Image (cartoon, rainbow, N blue to C red; front, side, top):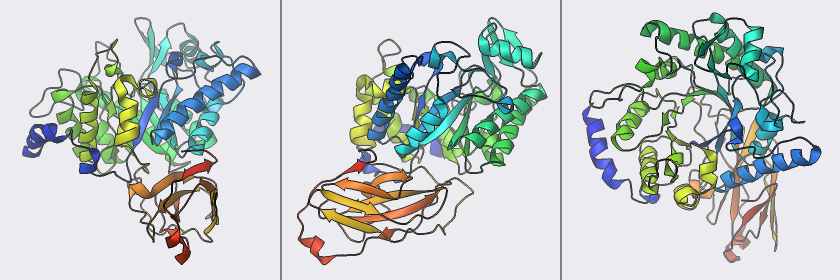
Length: 487
């Protein structure tokens, strides 16, 4: 372990309890949650078997996303491929995989609507990115719907360990199959990312191939998915969720459980080669099992977004009963090091276990944040919105501007000072709006600015509203967004 890591481990642990203001609120930061659908763990909690029950199931998701939006979460990874079963109507291009039973209560049966399209639309309506979380290698119980379907359609592509089935990484058809599956999602859905989970050899497998061979097998799958998705929509972010420790470091032992040596995930190499735009290592640890390995991931990210996953489920008394400080210290350290965070799982967050939701929403993520610009896709010439019109009344203000074209979203900033400083997170009112107008309630003594942003996260220069002397005479007030969604 180098000198920097030693200093990091010894010093930051003493100071991470300082308030976020000591570091400042970043304007760009990945703030994510994993939204688990297997068994309805996070969603859904009811089945869609009629028009009425469908509406109830959809409203459940809206309520979850409303809570996430109020906490300024900006990225939702929704479990889309569960165990060779899916959250959407697959086609021949995506293997004709059956519907997962979490939606209708019956494996293979449609819930009556496209759950992935619904999730994407609802996330975007709230200014959040939606990533399709794809479980790659495990395909469920040997005789369950998904595994049986795959065994019949692609004989010998699945092998068995105990009662579970797994796709063979060494079989070239696995790379082709998963690449086509992910490409079909990118082609048919307006997802912002595709995240590969369990893209590794099973930990239950006793005899692994030689390390170099096994890592090459997994890397071949990753490259195939990357190439197929980027050929369709290069702005779709490719990511994965590797085991939480990349490998042993010089100073710290991974206790025999790591990504590169144990399950043959060469995740750092995928970042270096450009196959991944960001990564979400599953760092469900604390103390010396967390901090040194977090730094190791961050130092090996090659300029890409590193978003360690935090095991907030460990807060629950029925799990490990961690204290809230165990998580808040990790959050402060990650922000200090310029990393984002992803919480596992959504329900533990929205249920406010040990006060984690209160801490994030009221303190740590007090203001919204944009996600980082995709590495390698920087563009400083995004068209600036025009014709910014602010119409005030005693009840508020309607803000509108002209469209900058397709695949463009808009960020709205507000301040009592003119011109509005769009570099300050405190001034970001709402992000990633698809529409070209918003309504602000009780907006007094405020100035507005709007920027355009492309799908890679590049932001234009601001269009400032025209300065008006009379506004200086108005009394300070407060505001909120009233359309299409409140904040």
